[in-house]
Length: 410
Image (tube, one colour):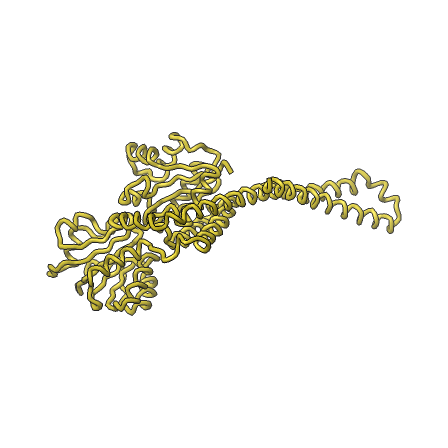
């Protein structure tokens, strides 16, 4: 388990606007991660990116010292300067072994989230694993660890009050929007059709909003969301010629740079000088912050939700001790599962080896003696050897499992 490591940038150690520097555009993600793995000889790799964290999960013999981290970020972002690479290597939070497993249990259970109790993170973890697995970056350990991670999160969501009446980043943003008393016929412009905006649209539709224009790089995804809310789907490249106006702009894309800068936002406004509401939940931000200095805008940003998130944590504080107990139990269970799996992997070649020994004995060592037996006797000897072969395979496995169970009880 010592080979398992995590390199993390979260709201705890990195300003939210800086977390986005570690985001990788989906269109180039596979190539970058494959190159990272091959260059550094990483055995397994998984990449998780959300609105308030980016984490790299890896299985490697290397120590996460300054030398390795420098090589890691130089391979991850070759275009970065030496100063940027050094800053990342210094800022990164690292975990190794069981502490890495425990940390990721906490992440998927939302205990380490900006908003404790939000359930979206478990879907994001599962999606990140499936994506990394599809890239053929993951292996046996990460597969086993993610399975236990999902089980842990489900226990915490089910058995503790930490996720009751959950308050996610999306619901916090919607609450702020609701307090602005926006009219139900307000023109709502949506940029991005991912999970975050989909969740936001569910709130808006539920509360009677119906005037939507949805822009997305993938038009079919925009059409799915538009159908859900009764809006109009448009390709992202038409955003810069859109002239129907808006009252509320909600954006959350995976873009590595700003979608709207001073010039493009001005063009989008046209002659409309009224005050607008912008909800930007993207990391990095989709709207260049300079826009808020030059135009009349009420901005709802991930960073502005931090205070509400801290209040959320205080309300759930009493449940955290119970969550810690579950984390400890799940970590012990994973430790036992991992040891059992190690025994299984170590013994996976035993059946083949025993079979080869039997075949060598019958065809070489005792071939002459067996040929002197009659057919019935040879059949009995063969059955006896097959029986012994099976026992030689099953007995050590059974003994190993019993030892593991005894250690677990102890």
